[in-house]
Image 1 (spheres, rainbow, N blue to C red):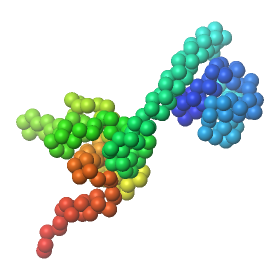
Image 2 (image 1 turned 45 degrees about the vertical axis):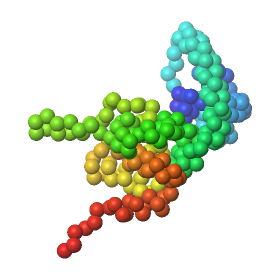
Image 3 (image 1 turned 135 degrees about the vertical axis):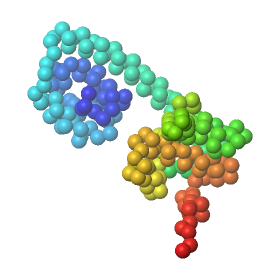
Image 4 (image 1 turned 120 degrees about the vertical axis):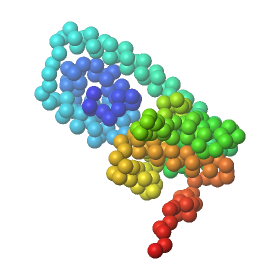
Length: 246
């Protein structure tokens, strides 16, 4: 389904529910498609409708009538279930937001660049608010799986991804680290350096960046302070390797 950016969004599901077969979609006028997108609360129905209309009328392979009838029935059943799931997710989001905004640590997590209204509560939930739970930043890195595991056999030595970890926490940190590259120049530079100089894959570079963020977040929790770019930059420069005097 390349007419929409995401399958798991209301506008896509409403469109499929309204036009469950290629023939039904092709028979719809531009105005009808635009109205359907509005019904599904599409972000920009006026711009998207002509593109969808044009794509629908391109030459394409056609399945037999029997297959179309069977698959369209299955599609309607699945769409009906997914719409309920989306509704429940929305109710969860509605309940989570006030809980997060009334939490004592909400300012700390909201200050993280790129965390936003979805990742910030998720990070708080996965990390927790009991500061005595972690002895140091290393313990969090190990638990979250952002720190690699060294492996050595004879002369062969290599670091590999940590599999024994709390995967929801690792995923939340991974998602946040990638989002941070869009707002923090140092985070983007770190990611690019890992990719270019160290030859790391995208996943490895983001995981390494998440490992850096764990140290920052841990220090924020210990000091009970929000993230400040200037404070971080000053600390980074203070701990940067100094060139040897000639």
